[in-house]
Image 1 (tube, rainbow, N blue to C red):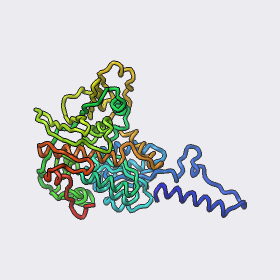
Image 2: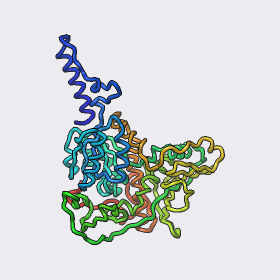
Image 3: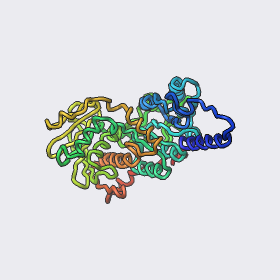
Image 4: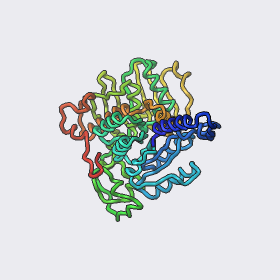
Length: 430
């Protein structure tokens, strides 16, 4: 039973009980049920579950578990060791042994007492799992990249709208003070007229190779077929699963690794440019020795440069915003560099490092309760992810592409448009 349903039922039960009792005898209600003494009443408790929780997912979950209004009730994972580890973490926090485990997350989604799910699988599963969770009436916090294609990013956003669920993309830097401040400088004209944005990305790689085949494990230990999910079949190798070496392989990865950082940094540039809801209209790979540089251009002429080198050393995931009067650059250390003396006095002190989602997860939990829109909702995810994928396609094809944000199609390039979607392996297609 979801949070909203539980609230309505609790209220109905209270009114019915009160009416039936009348003035005959007072009703004793424990303080914890009413929320007295700092206790969270059951009707306000968010019952959370997880799908595919390993290293990054554990970091995110650890920022959710301490909240008194959260109870983690179930974990679904294709790996037995991860099911065991996450259950132990949740049981220790809950003070009991009631966290349930599932190999197939679809079975877990059939429960009507789960309000929200944290999805931190590999990229190939993010959109399908999110869509199935939304269809099952769950709110969704999905790690990025949330979709491995332009088509899936749009379909995921459409599914969230149609089902009326709350969605948060795990691009947590939009909730961190140094990035918020840099975006504000760009948006409020303190850098002058904005003309160029810079987003850091990994060195790009797009491999279609296979690692050597190894004996497939017992599905009860590692369910290889479900680990692959919608991705094309290939023989098992433990490095994909146990060492996370699936990145950079086309079948598993989002856009030649461009979205590993680009989902964060291009998204921040979208915010600085006031471009949420749209994308650049041109994408051009540039011939720069030792770097993958892609120049993107918005309809208003503002440039967006994706590059991996030439940063000031302010931490991972740096971004830089340039106007005709000055610039600002920041990264995951929380430090901010500006070119104008007039802006230095108001720079916030570093607080939370860029990788920590503490503020971001609380925003999601608050929106689960209020039904308000999250900081990086499905529409923000849609436009920033589509822009990333369009840039990756331009890099793969090694040519300039023109894109129409209104149709989410490339203009006059059939080959590029065929790369907007991917075939999904049955029975895992959604």
